[in-house]
Image (cartoon, rainbow, N blue to C red; front, side, top):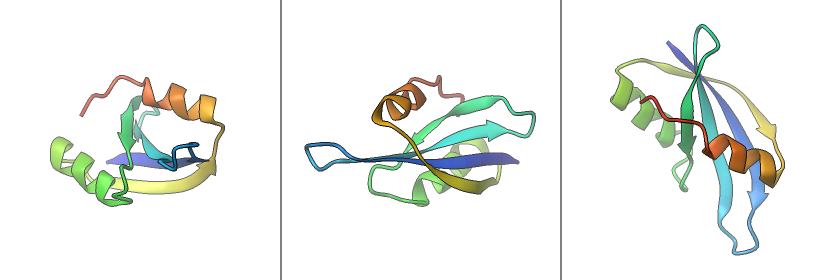
Length: 78
């Protein structure tokens, strides 16, 4: 099983939302970042399909734009 933390950095000046999910293994290892891209929880379904593992959303956090950009730099392992 994988776990996801939803992050939200509000909208950019262009109006594009800055939302996504940091995905973790049960060991706490970061498995990657799934960009929301207007899909909401469907982004997690895409991770499930790619990994063959269930994903459980744990919580949602407001973050700064800088923290969002850092999350997007996580290497994707799915």
